[in-house]
Length: 97
Image 1 (cartoon, rainbow, N blue to C red):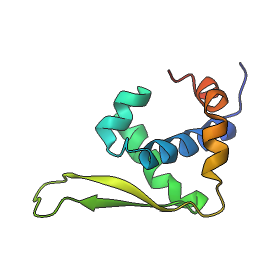
Image 2 (image 1 turned 60 degrees about the vertical axis):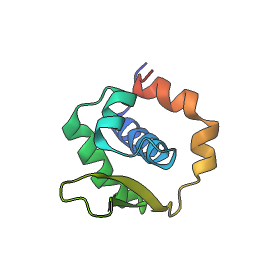
Image 3 (image 1 turned 60 degrees about the horizontal axis):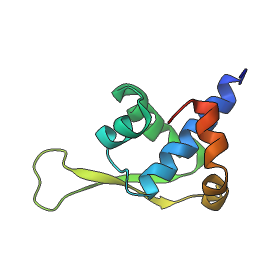
Image 4 (image 1 turned 30 degrees about the vertical axis):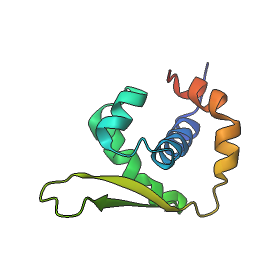
């Protein structure tokens, strides 16, 4: 399948936001779910703001290290129902299991 880098990047961001919203909410969990390297997962989370998706890291109460999870506070103009309805296509484009 010949897919543009722009489409792949967009779909990767949508899929990561969807996973975070469905409780796959840490970098290690995203790596396990997608097979993407740590740096790619981190960069993708950071890039969600480019789509006006408000994603924040919530640290666990009393934790001194980086124990916690990401949370989607606002989807902006993105329709998360569309993502759920098109998961099969998104995962096929990204070649994720």
